[in-house]
Amino acid sequence: MNEAEHIHTIALMLVPGIGVVRSRSLIDAMGSAERVFLNRREIPDALPGVSPRIVDLLNCPQAIARAEKEYEFVRKNKIRCLAINDEDYPSRLRECDDAPVILFFKGNTDLNVLRVVNMVGTRKATDYGKQICNRFLQEMKELCPDILVVSGLAYGIDIQAHHAALRNNISTVGILAHGLDRIYPPDHRNTAAKMIEKGGLLTEFITETSPDRYNFVSRNRIVAGMSDATIVVESAVKGGSLITASLARGYHRDCFAFPGRHTDTQSQGCNRLIQNNEAALIQSAEDLVMAMRWNDVQKKPKNVQPLLFPELTEEEEAIVALISKHEKMHINELVAAAGIPVYRMSVTLLELEMKRVLQALPGNVYRLIC
Image (cartoon, rainbow, N blue to C red):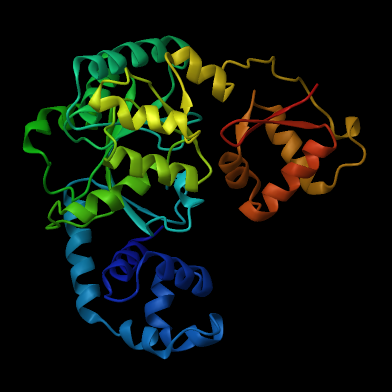
């Protein structure tokens, strides 16, 4: 995506009164953020029912000026802008209605790897929680070495998850509640620097944004939305990790929790999630891998021909051909590779399941049935 489009996407995020969901609707209707601004008088024709007030709000030169300043910071600091229609934008997050229209990424990892989990929990981690992080990611390194671990760089379980990932040479990404001109909390600067080398830092916020309380709640939707599974390690009855778990369920993602003794204050939230069937109980990395069926290894089918499935449509044949080149594929990978919209891809994949051509695995992953 070109510079002008990135600048206008940043600007759209900065226009007061527009918001994330409406910004995405405007981009979808007009075809680009740049056209949203340059052809704003045409918006009522492209998006029937839109308020004339929205058209007036888009006459906002100060938002463009601030976006240009932000883009200069991005360019000088070798930060990547990820607009919602960019190929490198986290494809799982793109499925969420409230996904940010622009993200800023400093790092060197692939945000669309086959397996992504987030580990969240209390800011007052006990030795039990720290041990879980260390043991779990040590095991995950053996079972799924290509996994990406996401968390929030906060005190407690977040930073323990990042540390454990780095120790085990696992890519890890921290989702920030502020811009990339600072690190909060400051105590985690050294860890953040290491993460940029093996993972990265990701945010929807521009520079000069303070790490205010409500930004952390907003940050949690990115943590949940870009992951296949949310793993709650330790949580009291109330806490940000429970918000992340709730968001994950709302996005139809898998949610897991480590149990604790009923007398442990920092495990009461996890125990309640399990008790209420809001999270599945796990005690090891193997439990997660089994639940997600990431251990379900199958030989790649060789030279699968459409002739094997004479009843397939052209789109179905294209999907079968793509999956035949891999052991399994995530729905987002199929959407990107086939150029088929998500809504139509979902219907087509269901048809292929009904025809006993594909098997659906947890986490929106599909493989061929041979």
